[in-house]
Length: 187
Image (cartoon, rainbow, N blue to C red; front, top):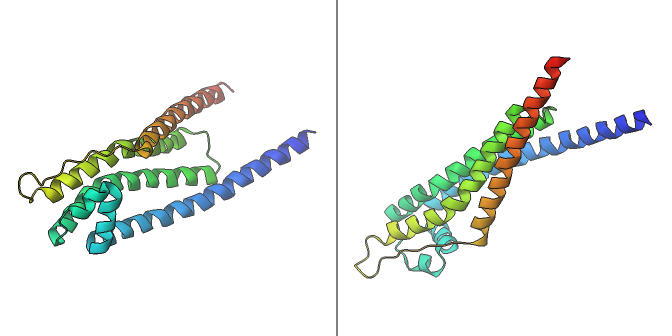
């Protein structure tokens, strides 16, 4: 009976190891693609226009889009993308920890917390960056033709909730790791 439970536990650890290695790889590829995609979006006018349409809807189609506007859009989008990359670097490190068998550690909790903060921040940075895009790109328009856009979506709300859950789980994981270390010192 005990050997069956032990083999099932090893199987679960093996699954976690394989999943974590794959997710570490997927996260690494994603980081590279996101950085490359944002650089191309700032450089290619039609991609930048698509970004504006996605972020601002029909208002994005009416905004001017010269070379300096593309650069401005790239700089504004760089903040939420930078926070996203920071979070992905931490979640990649979390997957590496899991793959190495270090699941219930304070270091794993640290990476999970940082990822949770980045997800939570996306819920705030999404609407903020859309507002900044509209303001910055319409600033050169004559009075009465400048745009102030406030976009709120269910995705922004969801990011705040999921980010909060991840931060709370990380706090619980950190406390569990502390208790495990404390208990190990008694033996």
